[in-house]
Length: 444
Image 1: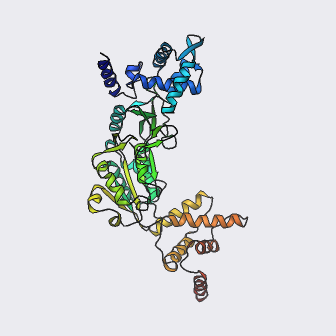
Image 2: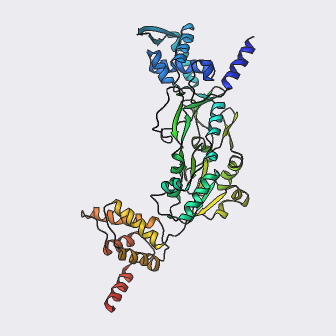
């Protein structure tokens, strides 16, 4: 009979629950009773005494479940009533409960929002897949409005988002790959998704919600929702050269004795940007081999400390941004799995001037068209550089820094720009250029 009850408890815990439906009983919550009891007792030990209502708020469970947990803990002599506030009991932990809480804390320090089941998490992530999104031209143009980009490139980004597959952004440094990837995430961020505070797997807690990554939506929240989930904009996670192979697995904290989800898990239903791809501390081929199956089949396997593997969804738009030739960091088989390759390169004269005017205007400065045309000639002919999207911002910054140092109002004139170019570019001294320009002016 005891085995039958344990089997029924396990099946009940495995049943998916919906964020839109607030569970009113322990059985509806899906998680095993013992898990919820342990979290309630640790919460009371660390933050109590308080009322049953506050227990509900701290664990993100309904009042009915908090009341049920209180009765179960009281029957085991782990908590006691210290008074009443109207019809709500004020509770405190007993000496026996304190001993039990210390024992539980030695196993895991987690005492926050109650977790959801792995089955619930998997089902919800699949429902919210980026592959189900349909974006249109207006959505992309609005998200990229702060950037100066041609319609052909914007169309490529729009098609890439609708594909729900990986994107490879490549080109020389300073052409706006990172800015474009971040703008791309804005298209997805308009949509709202459910993110759980944590999930429970085989008695282990894995935290998922990260306030630094997951931004709550401003839409009104239903009173009937399951508060173990948070309504957020689709997330955007960026990792760069600091990425290691260990960071791609569950992060076990030896102090709290619970797990933190890896970057790709926190990016589920959103965008994962691998910036400066090819320059990570992990070799590119090792990373690509790790993600061949996830990119192809939308599943990822993570490992708990004991060696147990769990399968989670890999449902995100992965953006590889690199200034290295794709053929040098990816083999043909993997390049095939990256459905869209977008090259960002040199910008036109008109785009350069527009970017310069925008950035200068943000600082209350104006730039003369003839002066900008002369600047373009100097960059191309003297510095022997193609026009890149980062140059206007960097040169205006040079002007601002020089004015700040000299304690004077900034102004964009020829002298300020030549000084900025001299400080920014290292290829050649500008003295010859100045003499040549003055000679041309005398001859004319």
